[in-house]
Image 1: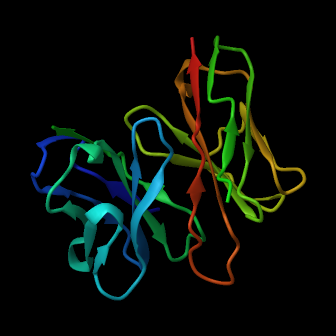
Image 2: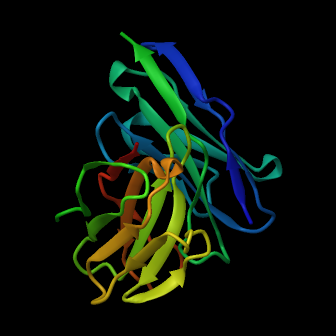
Length: 114
Length: 116
């Protein structure tokens, strides 16, 4: 069974700082990869996804993520964070033979100081 | 387009009591999921329905948890009797049924359960 690790549980940044959140998964086969965001008091929303092709994917609100197959990683980045990016971020994996099932990481809580 | 609806949003019960959560998926979505999200952890899939049939319930604690989707639309998740460790947010999600490949899951707001 696949698993997902997010090594940073809490991150505190000042506005305009750069962001990188780590995500590693354990599964040797083909995967679809996702980042979800949960703003305070709101439901989980899809931030970006990778299925195939260009390993650098761009999502909403200036976020991007890079799939590095050799490292089993899918790190999330943003060059300059805003206070409104304060939220919890979840990495998730869908293995090709797991139907539509998602396995989530433990999440990273990001706080951006104004 | 209306999103996934869940009720109640909050529930507080004492241990050994029973509780039920309701979910209404996005119209036309054949697949429905229930997740458990314990504080500080990511969502964990409990059960997945395709129309009114169960696709996967391998992580559902069947001695106390049950779920149904009798008409292939709404779904109910029940816990009976509840334990302290059941305190969590219960998320419902739905997705369409495509011909192949992954179909995006859309999440509801969740029900926050506190067991005292």
